[in-house]
Length: 291
Length: 291
Image 1: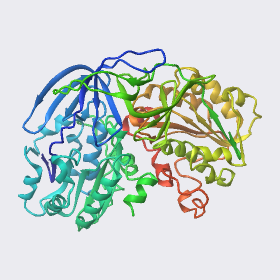
Image 2: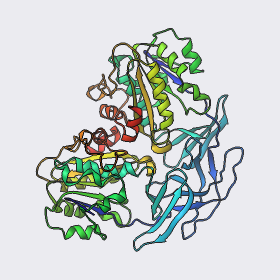
Image 3: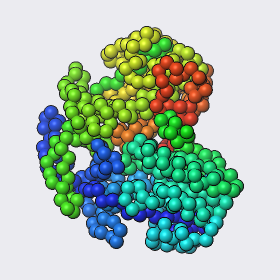
């Protein structure tokens, strides 16, 4: 998807590790030692061993297999419609704003030309694709980027799945190098970068790879998403050599722009305060990321 | 528990709504429609309908009934030891720092006399009770506060359970009034204040009650706790009329105090940056809390 000077690279597929629509039998006894949970979806995955988040299923709306992934869409009882790829929740209607608004607005409000990517693009995921400024490319993002002329983009947003399975290369140095090449000097990238609670060792590697490739600045930011494992997800925000980018202090303050809400209504999650706050890390994460 | 000028009021019990150590039978089929989850603890509660978080149980260490609550302690496979009261996870060894460090340090670092409550108190929950400055009162916090002379405390921390059941009165105006009375002018209170993702209507009521009672300032802050429902929990930070308290900008900057880590080792979660960031709210919450 291209928006003004930005490109959003879809991630690859994820290893099929058996997320399930759970149909279990059992009885709730007085001592609370068992429970009936028919019709729940449970997300079980070796990426977050020993814990599972479950959502009550009202109705399965779609179940099938694309060329790339197993796909389930269901109506949940309290989180709206839910998209599941290879057993892993990708989004729910109730909390997708916290991920989508942050992964897009943090990088795009960090560069000094907000007019190239307007706020009309973001209120929900569908509207963006209908924007006349958007050119949508469906395919392998890694291959796509290799054929992009050097210095093409102001911003690249990598909305990848987890680094186990085919999305693995989206977290590695050769991919970051082709991202850096595709960006203009002082251009910015935002990539999905896992949970500080679950995956500090992965984050440490990503930060190390990014520091070697992006010669502007390298930062980690995070947001709350209840239906993602551990309830948080993070992003790497990096810039290439060129005009410096101060990611923590947005160049475009959306709160001060009276026109920003006129066409599509107000954002649900993102604002300039939460943009800056997203870069403040708990001490255990700061010690590893800033070291 | 009294620490210098501070008191921590334990919450009441919670309605028994059937959180369970789950022992379910079932089979994992090829289409992913069912799963075996023997030996998992699942947290099911009408306070967060339609979702459940589950932890794998290695060994149940204690199961019994106190005068107030059903108590379960188990060794989980990836979150350390877990304390469950009336079916609701109260803490895990892996993420308690995010709650305990924030509920205590945010109020205590917000007032200009950090010497009265030193950092030695906080590295983990057990150490604090052994501090010679601590006087521990076990009992009903509501009744205790009613008998405290007016203006006694610099800070009161209310670590309550959820407002359904016996802890209900810890969220109501009469309790806040006795807290305000027990505080000195410009004294501060920090109370557990639920999740912005799950309980905005409850938060709205708490904020309204606090605005009527606390004539200094009234603020909402939040932190990430993976094992709490929706992955976040919030706090009300309020002050009484008197010397103004700017909660968002800590009067005591723990990061700049070279002595702060000497006796008990570094904090895992809290730092001055995350203190300030905790007051930055997503737009959907800001619209309701700041209105």
